[in-house]
Figure 1 (cartoon, rainbow, N blue to C red):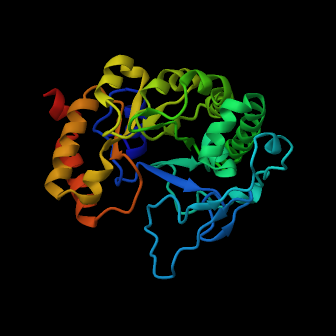
Figure 2 (figure 1 turned 90 degrees about the vertical axis):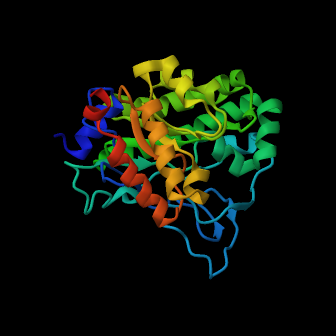
Length: 318
């Protein structure tokens, strides 16, 4: 039997895994460089102000952020072109592998806000959307500079021994894309390609998260080098994506966030069984919730139990 890590890589690349890997079996670990998360209150390194949270608020272990932006420091994309953005420091990546058995666990380096998300934080989302229409040249330059920051982050992770990258950038809501795919291809995608290329040259897989009904962007992201997608099951037709792209696509998701947050253990069991049947038959599935939040312990246990119950490939093939 393969180690959890070897089995995960086999699933990721459709190479006859033993079972469907799942979040919780320690096949992978997502790590954060120093300063990746925003501050609990005050300004971050980019000048964005984050809301203070009450002392009574308890941050869940799995939550990706501890606050939300309340003030955006710039009004136009032109202001960002000459802005001295933060430069990745080797000290940010020190000690990331401490306590991790890298023979058994794939270590994935998590990036801060992706290019479009960062533009939204700097200008405000409505300001960023206006700028994409009214200042396309300045936006392209600003997005390229944000991508440069991510290139530095990717190189820092790889130099520290991290073996994969996790990037997130939101392009859609439940109703569809937030911006025209043609605009995204012209302004956002070129910078993403450069970030992906750092990992591709190292032979490292790339995990990509985007919210909403994001099918319009998947083909270009695959062509750019994305390996596995963390998508929203309730918004995207994952089965149709698998049918369309076959062994070119892998998923690290499958269990809807709402089910994990508010459903019963029985509902989680049913969601796991459906995800494995729909997405896991030929490999390409790492079973996980669609978003990484703090879920009820009973539902986390239900996901693990169901993954072990239904996820054997010998059972599926037999």
